[in-house]
Amino acid sequence: MDMLPISFVIFITIPEVIVKIFLGLQLIGVKPPIKRVIIAGILQGIAVYFIRNYYEYDLSFILQTIIAIFLTFTIVRVRLLCSLLVNLIGTAIAILVETAYLIIFLKVTQLTYVEIISREWLRVASLAPKIVILLLILIMVIKSKITIEEEISFLGKINKHIKM
Image: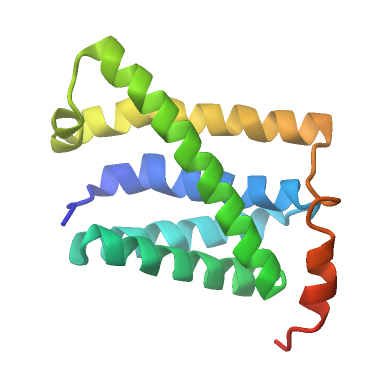
């Protein structure tokens, strides 16, 4: 079980969730309501804190994903399929960024992952640049008006047949 410090939730988890939801919505062509995304991000951060402190990683990842989809669906008020897609896209991008970043960070600093997660403020400081990278990706997506709407247009037909 990974005991997640509250400082990590406040400075890393909540901003990451907000950016992931925002990024996923932007990429599928949905103009996100900022206030609702922030509320969903804060509630998801609180949920992550309790889930990660009481469940093993594999179960916590599944629970976090289900709660993220539910919160995006209910608070951001998008269709269920849209919520699923938004969270999968945002999480996939965040995982890719974090993996690439950590490989470089660990090599440059000569620290181990265990050393990082065992020291609260080092854990926060070492992953803060990941949030900046995700924000830069979000800014690029917004400014360049990048979407994957055409690639996922077939989902609109499927989504219309789902009863909510």
